[in-house]
Length: 465
Ligand code: URP
Ligand code: ZN
Ligand code: ZN
Image 1 (cartoon, rainbow, N blue to C red):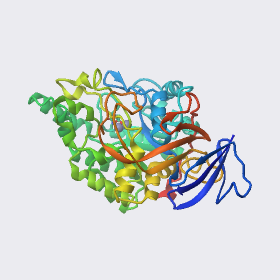
Image 2 (image 1 turned 135 degrees about the horizontal axis):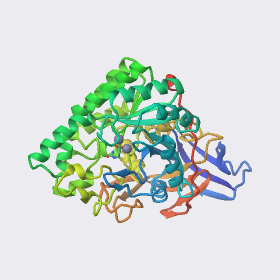
Image 3 (image 1 turned 90 degrees about the horizontal axis):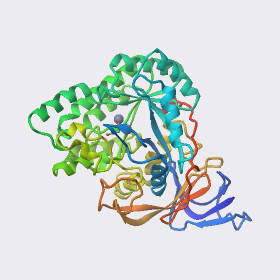
């Protein structure tokens, strides 16, 4: 199958230009002006005049079917990757989970089974380590060899995913040997639990107090601590879902002294605020960790993206229905499952708030939603690029279309939207995954099982800093 995409404006992290793209099979075969006039033929032509052609979005932080708080994140690999495709994302990197007392292998196998035959677009895995011991440390090397080179550890969630400093340091030492990358959820979970218990004892049980209890300084402290541990181990470190100015300042300071410290933020920390956690129990829709912050933190995060102290925007997509799931925490915010739906909205939100909003260029937009995560997580230039030989993961994107985000029209399997009623400028019209159209003008054209596991090599962080 050969597909010709004509007359679009190709937008990459490096620049923009007018050209046609010939897709042959699963990859980009040719890029040039007026290809048809030059004798190039194709089975299908997609006219892209007046629109951008961008590399498909890469969401490097999702949780399909994550077990959390006695329930499971609602999207499966089918519904979640279908929603991703509607939103212009053609690769996700999801977190496989090592349960306490179990091996990494069991966790990874479980996640392969969930994704295989179900995913609509390509996927990779990071590994959540909940139990650092001699066996799981040794298993890390095997996972790196299998294309799963990143390991998420937590200074939050005591009793669940939490690791102490010694465990984190041991895992970092292991990546010094095997080339893997440690990803850190950096909040001081032990201190948070003290404040959260105090709040509940004082009768403050509403979702708003989830935000109050998780002080920004607890994120700043943990961020500094894990970066210092990484420095001591001589390894790069990647901070996930950064939300607070306090944490960003620690990251900046580390980068200024030459540390290979990297981070992502998420749309919720750029567009939503602590106030969204108000309004009684409705605020449960916005409970995630780290929590939403006062608006001035968001402005700092935008600056962090502009200046490349923050390299990536991922979603931390982890959807729970308001009815039946978030409701588990009525009367005690500590029991609300943590996480928000976002995989479908990230590309448009960042286009609207970043490129249209004048905070950064359309090229930087492509960088934070696609190219930077591709480089960070060993996918580049197979993905995150428009180049001959790259996978034909392409989005024909209308930068002028306006749409209203709503749970009544989104494709995520969750009963609310955090962005209900928000109008965004920009829309993915045609989405190709390895040369196959998976979404065309609002209609699903893909299939479960088209998405393949992508084996990733460790990225070369010495050159990225
Ligand atoms: O609230 C969140 N972030 N839920 C998902 C688990 C995590 O910490 O990433
Ligand atoms: Zn986390
Ligand atoms: Zn997460």
